[in-house]
Image (tube, rainbow, N blue to C red):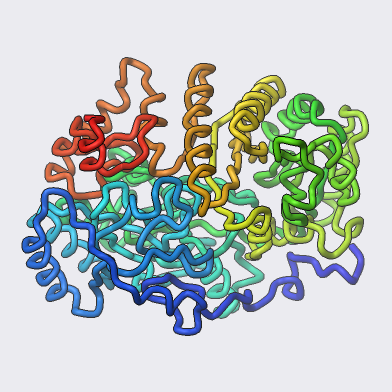
Amino acid sequence: MPASIPSTASPAGRPKKIERPIWHGTVLSQHPSSPYISKTRDERPIVLPPHTSESAFETALRELRELLGEEWVKCNDVALVDGDYHAVPLSHDAYHILEQDDLVPSAVCWPKDTEQVATVVKWANRHKIPIWPISIGRNLGYGGSAPRVRGSVVVDLGRRMNRVLDVSEQNAACLVEPGVQYITLYEHLQEIGLGNKLWIDVPDLPGGSVMGNALDRGVGYTPHGDHWSQHCGLEVVLPDGDIVRTGMGALPGTDCWQLFPYGFGPYHDGIFSQSNYGIVTKMGVWLMPNPGGIRPFMATFPREEDLAAAVDALRPLMVQKIVGNVPCLRLGVQDATMYHKKTEFPLRENGLIDRKKAQTMIDKLGTGAWVFYGALYGPDEITAPKFDYIKKALSVVSGAKFYERKDVPSNHYLNDYAKFTAGIPTWRELDRMQFIPNASHLFFAPISAIDGKDALRQSHMCRNRMEEYGFDYLGTFFIGHRAMHHVISFMYDKTDPEMKKRALSCIRALIEDAAKIGVGEYRTHLALQDQVAGTYNWGDGATMRLNEKLKDALDPNGILQPGRSGIWPKRYRGQGWELKGGEERSDILFKRSAGRL
């Protein structure tokens, strides 16, 4: 590797700090120099929790302030300012797909530790007020910090519970609280002298919660890219306020809580992922020892129809674990959105990108119609022959080309990808948000087999439906060992009501299209979770019946995140809260007044 390109596996290639704006926080509690601070001082009416009068809510909040301290409970009466990635609101969903004032909380509170979280849960049970815990609030494209039930109280765990509690160099493991961001975990390892010895896995952007992303089963780019699979041991506050530790954590005095995930008896961790059965306050996370070298690379394929052959060629490389990380196969146009605004692309009369004409622009970037990004780990004597083997395997696609960092200019995405694959945070993916004015994104994320025919079928299905509704298909396949996450970004102008409605209608149609061919999403926006949950209906809805039995047993008062993943407690169930398609608002009172119930 040329001397001009420092190896990301060496200390010289690993920065101590990752630059970020000083207002990197939240709109309700942000740095005074944030460009959004002056806009949050206009008051607006508070949305009350369901079945709660104004006087009852005032009494309940007064009690909560006495329990947590006056400064740690605030009413959500601020103006609804969307901010940006560095200044995300706690007041609503910054990337709102329903009306901006729809999925809004009544108040926000900030507990300082697990015991105070349990205190909040018991308070919620006494007053029958729904609560909505968040880690950071940057689950953008999936609902952000917004609650599913309008008027819930957001429990912001991240502001005060943000410590890295333990790091074991010997065992390559750590214990974190909800507010530990990828960027802060990276910098913590640097500060304690382990930054070159132990690596983290980072997603596209590093401002999110390590714990929150794992609980939502997010993905990254290293061999540890399946974030949920790399957790080990949880501390959880149950909906009745009881505190439990899973796995070996149930054994007093153990040294193995972050080492062995199962313990004795039933394995409970899974019911706390993408669920509303408990509030996770501590999580063990496995780290990656420095492998002694890394070889990021990309392969380009010249034609859109090459997708099937490329995927089929990749399958044995993934099943046999020859490719060392969680690689991605991305549409060339999607790659180009990091370099160009939409107005810079050749457009058709309907306003969509002319893909054939755009290919000339894409070729100048060294990107094919499809581009594959991967990485190999270990010293050169291991990665060089592996790379040769991969090039030979993928060369079955006519016209395939291969690149390493030395082959591309300094601003090429491959250089940022090299950082991702070495666990170094970068903000490069924010460049995508310049694609259109007031850009927001909504994700459609179905699962695909590593099968060329299936990938091509999904790609065509999604493109045809999206173009019908006036959206460009921007798809990426994140490839695991046996399946792929097909993550499609809907880019829309959140200030354009008509475009928002089209985006929502389109993704609802895609959910139906996918279900008809046995394809399901692994993750979705709050407003779509009822519909997606309804597609997982084998056995006449057996899975949802099980989910509801667990919910009613653990949360009889229905106070914890009602509606999360389409799981409604008994007191909400069948009352009109579900959004199964076609609704314009989640507000049950609005739906009743419109004659929809």
